[in-house]
Length: 204
Image 1 (spheres, rainbow, N blue to C red):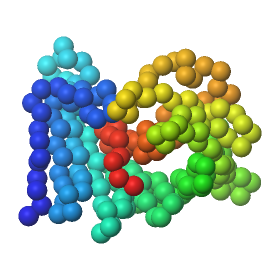
Image 2 (image 1 turned 90 degrees about the horizontal axis):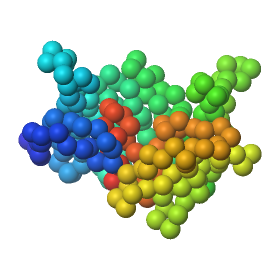
Image 3 (image 1 turned 135 degrees about the vertical axis):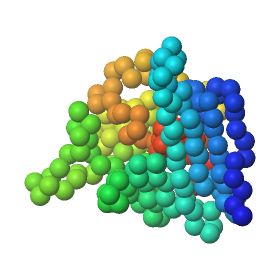
Image 4 (image 1 turned 90 degrees about the vertical axis):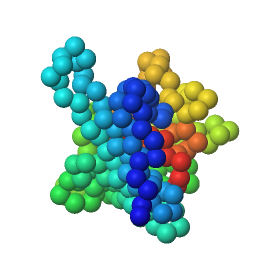
């Protein structure tokens, strides 16, 4: 039998690496002691409204036998599928779109315009561009630049990986990227945005 809930908080807490108050956090692991499902109950946005419903966010994981992450999806079927160095974005209908792939100094990603929309070529296919990660001595991504040398993102971290929420880090950026544009941050690990739980990945 797969272990069920490993711990549950009855009071609001903070999900690892993110400031999201939750009234219940449940983690379920498989036989290999790999996270199978993370589920959080998030209180209503208006605490003064007793009728405002709480929401439940979840992320479900599948793994290969060697502990390599194979996929992660939220309760709506959105997520990512991992195939070697390739990452595919999974849509609710099961469609897969190539989202990015790693190269020696960063990632090759789908190019976005100023509105965050995917840039398409004349044939209607997504345009990909290389991005380069400038890292510190811990392997944490501090700066992301494109092939033109434009700075897309800057990151500073607290000692255990939480990103600084500092507007000054975004000042002067030529074409600032959204937070979701690069999920590989502290120690080069992927920040798990699926399910809105915003966990820090501890495995490849």
